[in-house]
Length: 384
Image (tube, rainbow, N blue to C red; front, side):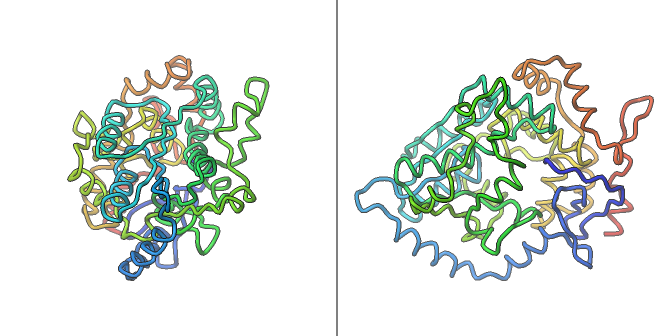
């Protein structure tokens, strides 16, 4: 979310209705976005062959001493739990689950982690210095309108560092977001193997060493820094994306894991800002994160979720429009207050920073507040 799209010439993908306001999204000559084109290519893949390739990898890395066979970076959410469960119970692996702690943990996230662990997993939970984390969250909210920049770094770095420390070279992250959701893959193998350059360029936007200042030291930012390429090569680390081997579908992942454990969804029936109740449940700060996406780019969490479900033919374009109209703008007072308390600012400061990050090419200030200049509407739905 570090890029700004200042173009007022908005267009929407003819398949999934995601707009070109999304950073790094691309459209082909027929008006189809790169995420939809990637999905079309995935539908042609023989996943039986991919599973055989996965089995060969697992066989190669299975521990001869009966210790951990692989690492799963694990939030406790539907996707990482789906991966962990399949690796253990379908493929006979012994994964170590590694969690970089959420910024403002939720009860649902804690319960879901506990319910999977009870099935017989070992779990490594890393909680960084909270004073530093709050300072960084505040800084990035003010500077970039994204309070999770450092967390995005941590969820990639800590599993790699645990891998090196404990000599567990095989890692399975979930999906390669730049491929699956419309972004900027840097290499032909980007959707298969994690690449450090992509983390810096697409996920973080810079290197954590740049975060050092009069308040934050080099020691403070260590949990957010990546091992070097030389360290990874020396330790023979292989960080794969599980989705490369799997016909990836986040809704199917949810259906799978809720059939295996008592998976807690949002207690209010749906998550504020969207129509779903099963995604990004482990961190209260996500509500602010997705709201700032709406502020900066004009599309919110409902657009994100509806686009993905439309891609997989789970909803209609008419339903997409209703979900976006009803929920994209939504954020609750409780979520704002929780975030303000976390980074120690007033609600007035919160509103001031939010408005600072509005792209005035897409927002119009009126006597009643702010209105989007360009909204998805029924005409656009019909045209697409």
